[in-house]
Amino acid sequence: MRHRYSGRKLGRTSSHRDAMFRNMVTSLFEHERIVTTKEKAKELRPIAEKMITLGKRGDLHARRQALSYVRCAGVVHKLFGEIAEQFADRKGGYTRIIQTGVRRGDNASMAIIELVGYDETVAAATTEA
Image (cartoon, rainbow, N blue to C red):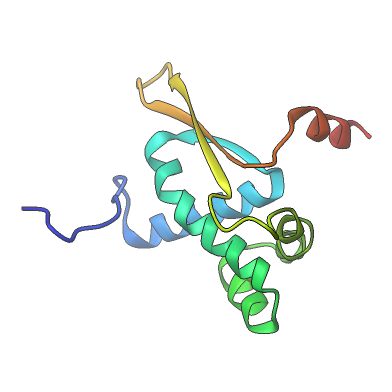
């Protein structure tokens, strides 16, 4: 029986899983939207939401906790600045998972995980400018 087993192994060792999720959280906050498999997105969501909650707290200890997980200090600065301001009045549910179909090579179900306030037109304008 699988009672009280939480999380997915995703065919990786625990250290590989931890490194993968750290990289994915960093990329999610840097680009505000990433494409991944549905299972990885479902596992990434609670980690990302905890990081946003740390950003909303905004104290030094929360910043150090975020720096111990997120790989780039610039991304932590963005998390505690604009992302925390964006979700200041929101109680939870900071991310959205959109299923997009299957991957051509191995038929894996793909999904987009993004921050709730993500707007493609604004993101395209900032990357072009």
